[in-house]
Image (cartoon, rainbow, N blue to C red; front, top):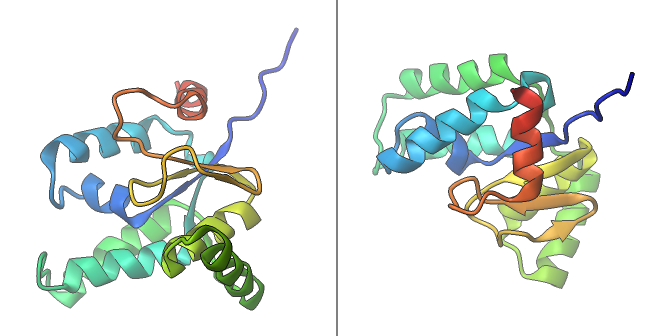
Length: 158
């Protein structure tokens, strides 16, 4: 009997959460919901920064949810998946990423925390699709050509 390899751990960026909540684009929203539902729940990780960004967007001018509603929505994500905190070490590694690869600060923090959590994938449309750092590959789940690592993660949840 052969055992199947564990699926890659997957970190989700705030844009994936927001689309899954039907914020903005309906087509991307359906795709985000389908991808999240297909991933094995035990493989998903949320960097704490993602929850902060999600709360910020939900309460901002473009979405304008009441703060209590936004808090409850973020609380549902928090209850659904483990959350990884941002450490001082993660901030310094993010500063290195900003300097060396010109990433945005908060994107770099998310990527570092995903790496620290042992993720093989970071699902995001905000960073360069295919960018790889410390074992984490950034993949947009909204592309028509499904990245092989995402396909593997989705297959593991089937």
